Length: 191
Image 1 (cartoon, rainbow, N blue to C red):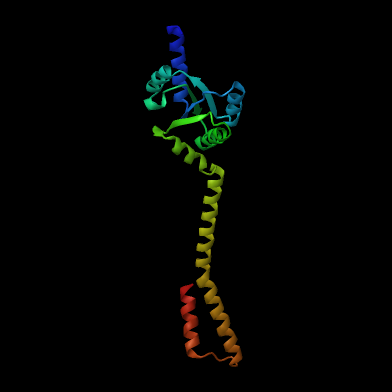
Image 2 (tube, rainbow, N blue to C red):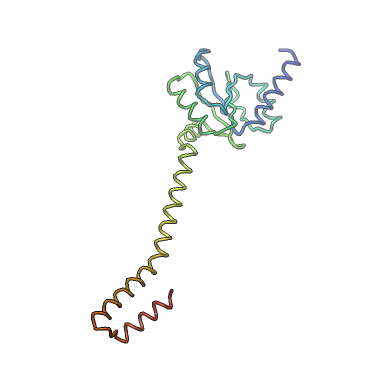
């Protein structure tokens, strides 16, 4: 590869690193072109998958300020550059590697932190963003419903007490005992 071509390749990789929130490094040895195409489709629209040269990747990563550990840059390497949801891409890689064991996840870099292959698998197990948001909304709604019930409880108790006193007054022939009037006045004061 000529020096000008190497410079252009490093510049392109640097740009990809800068535009990515995460990168997952894999070993693809033994996968056919059809399998690599299938993998690219399974990663989603916000992820690009590219076969890279380790020395050029090391240069581009350092230029981009993307801390890729040296131990991940051994053997044939391909990188999934993730600009969208890292969970979706990690799930795509995990699922593909289950059906195609020749794809080996070496590790990843997410938000400036190196992740092990096990960390990538755990990231893939995280529920989708929409599900997490729905659970949070449900929890908030439940809490608000409980709070509204707690605020309404004293008012309903006072209303039941007033109704009971009214019934007692009518049953006693229109005369309410003095203690009942005091309770009614106390209940009115709390409103």
